[in-house]
Structures are given as structure tokens and as C-alpha cells.
Image (cartoon, rainbow, N blue to C red; front, side, top):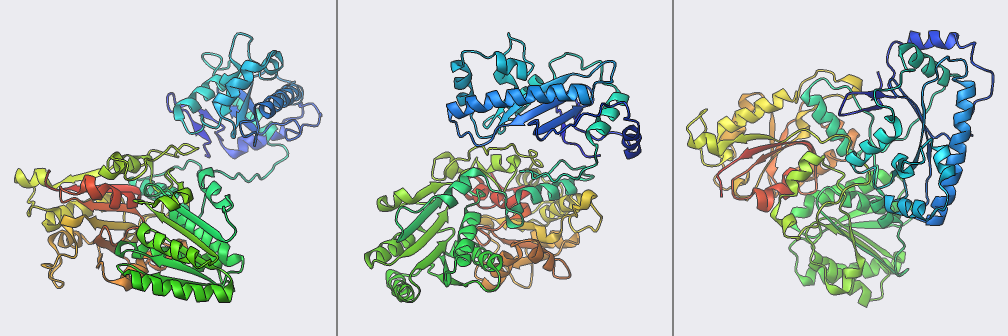
Length: 607
């Protein structure tokens, strides 16, 4: 059964293939009574057809690319109403003509590029609404706008539900003409001739999932897919398509909260540069915490561009003084003399370094491209015109976004606030799971030890049990080919006071939390902050399904690291070890934001 939509309030289903395929085939073979009139819904401007089991039929016209132009909206509204009226007449004659009692026919209009404010303005200025009312089957006393779905309505579930009710639920109690036999006949009639249709969706269709683990995996694939199948919002496209102010200087500073596709935009920019024939793209690391992000961007640009394109060169300027930066600028000048232009990408960038490079290249009249991104940016005044905000969350589901929004840096405006994306999230996401080490430790329950979760084997055991409940590492098959969670899909991250690299850790004796995980059969891999090879491997393993699949096998393990070590990477499941002093200051922004689906919060002492 493929479900297109299900009403949250009463469970009614629309556009659902109920029953067996042989019922539809049988109905199709017995449609001799249908009048032989050509039926071309495409020509009749029906872009969306819904056959509702209880409410009848809805036909909708989609009006694209009006861009809030009142005159264009008015013209297209009249055309859509006329076409819908024509389509309604054809359907009544060709599809429903032989039925003793015809099901209700509803009409609606979808305006994906027009705001409701613009629509209301257009309707207010129209002297005669009779043509629209007739085309949409709206009574004179009702508001035509109620059956119109606008751009801002699509991002608000409440507005979307209101449009749905106005469009399909005009008659209380349903349509008496709709029964199982009629529904089956209608599906068969609209399916003739048999056709295969490809639908390009902004979100995956609803899936039947069997376990919580399958849910986490499906949500992670949906929100973590920028590394596999990129589906950007208009906000990101506008940044990529905007021409530079100066042909010689192409600068963009991408600023926004975590998980808003800043890295993806940099990767696409680098890919475009290589495909256009540039010799080298320099990927710049400006801080110790930016290593993973630099490796990720460099690897993705190189792999996406493929063989035959230019090269990608990683440059580490983390902690380097002005002399080292100036020396590199001289090398860039020589590169520009040979190749005509310099191209630089910098993720998780430090603005001081970026500003110094920008000014030095400009003073030397070098033609250059400089695109940088970051979460906390103090942009100097002479570069403010290059700042572009990306604030719509693509990585994490709403349940995780709400936790990240509680970070101190987001509350005080150091990091820009999230904004609502243009389409609704497919689901809210799994709720955050918690282990309260503090309460259990001080109440002397369940054998907790140590002040911090990192020093508690019992916390490790409880987290391992949660991972098992999520079916992490299990070989069972999920429905619809979704697969299951693997140990490589899990990060265990700590804040500064739960540092996994503390000097007193004996490398030959794992910390108690790790012992607790391993005692339950969970393999672990500890990645130190200064282990560049391991960090690079993590970044490249994140870069798409092929790399992720390569990591699944004997070496598969849960990654244990300090939150700063993996800054810029993501996983389906993130276990956050909270010391109790760093959740709001760093943990939410640095650890929880790495999750594309499930957060497990191990709480430590209170402030």
C-alpha cells in the first residue's frame, strides 16, 4: 500500500491504493459503460488529482513562477479557473457519466511561488470573482482564497491542514456517493491506459517502518542526505546563482546555525569551479577545530568533480602567524600569474585569517574567488557586504533542532536563529532519549559511579541497551530496502569537561563509560583530536553511501571523540556525554547538532 497522505486528526486517507491489484484490474475490464470521449487531463490543466475514499475527487491546478507579481497572479488565476471548469465538465461526461449518483468534484489551485499576502491583495482588487467561484465550485458567500494553497502555507502544517479541509471536506460526514465499489471503479478509470509516472518530491514518501531503529535510520537518511542526494531550498540556490559584484573578486561569507547546508554550498561551488576548468581549488583550514570540515569539503569536491578535472589542495593555516599567512599569499600570487585566478574555499572559518587573505590579495590586484562559511563569525566592516545568511535546517529533524536552539550562543544572537524551511519536515523526528547520571548517582541507584558520565560504566551499559533497542548493528532487514543502523552511524561525543583526551586516561585501559559499552558488545573506536589520519578517515567516510558502505565490516565501530574533533561531520545517532557545565554553552551546538535523527543525552551534574 502506498499512502500519499493521511489526516492526523481522523485517520482519513487520500490517494491511497486500498485493496488488491486484481480488484483494480477487474474494474478496469468492466469499464465498457464509460463514454468514448478523449480525456487528456494534461491538456485540461489538471496537475494534481486526488481520489479520496470518502470525500470524492479533487482536481488542482498548479501556477508556478509568478514571483508575487499581482498582475501575473491575476491572469494565471483566471486561466486556471477556466481550465479547471473545462476539466470538471470533461470528467463528469467521460468518467462519471454512467454513474447513477456522481461523487463530488472539488477544485483547488496551488501557487508554490506566491505568498498568501500577494494572493489576498490580488483577490481584493478583482472587481468580479464570479469566474473564479465557478471554476473552483465555491459558493458566492465563501472566500476563494480558502481553496488556494500558497508558498507560505506549505511550510505551516496548520495552514496546510486548513487548505486540505477547505478543498476536500466541504460536506460534513463525507460524500454519500463514495463507497468501496465506486472508489475502485474510479481508480481503474483514471488509470487507463496503464502508465508509469515518475514523481520528483522534495521529501521521501511515507514509509511503513517496523521498529524505532528503522525510524531513526529513515529519518537520518532523509535529513542527512545532503551527502548523498542533494535537495536544496531556494535560499541556497540564490547564494549559488547570485553573480559576484566584481568579475575580479568573487567573495561570499556564509553565516548561519549548524546544519543549514553551508558546507554543501561550498562543495557545490568547488565542484562548479573544477568543472569550469580551473586548475586548483584550495581548501583552507583556519582553526584546529576545522580539520574535519576541511577534509570533508576537499574530499567531496574532488570525488564529485571526478577524473579529468583540476586538483584540490588542502592548506592548513590553523594557529599560524601573519608571516606564514603572508608567505602563502605570495604563493597564491604566483599561482594567479600562471593560471589567471585563485580559488579558495574555507569551512568553519576564522574571520581574522579570511580577512587578512582577502585584503592581501586585493592589494596585489589578484583575481580571486574566496568563499568561506562559519557558525560564529565576527566579520570586519569592509567584508560585511559579502555575508549571506543560511538559516533553514537541512541536517536535523525538528526534535533535534529544538534542542540546538536552546544553546546560549543562539539565545544571545552570537549564532543566527533558525528560520522555517519552505516545506514541512516529513516528521518531527524521534524524541531525545536521556540517561540521568546525576540523579541516579546521588540517589545511589543502579550502580552509577564517578561524578561525570565519562567515568561511569553503568552509563555506558544503559546507552548500549538503548543502541540495541534501536537495532544498531543488527542484521535484520528493514522494509522498503531501508536497511538498518550500523555502529558507524553512531557518535559518542563529550564536551570540554568530559574530554575523551584527558591526560590521565590510560591508553591501555579504556574509560569506564567505554568499558560499559564494550561489555554489552558495542565496538568502539576512539579518535584523538590530534590524530589527523583518523579524523581524515572519519570525514571521508561521511562523504556518501559508497564511502559509508566501505566502512561497514570488521572495522565498523562507534566513534568516540571530543565534540570539537568532529566539528563539521554528522551521524544518524549522537550520544552526548554532558559534564553538566557545558550543555547550553557548547554541548547543544557542538554535539547534538551533529545528529541527523536521534540524540541520546547522558546528563551529568547540574550547574
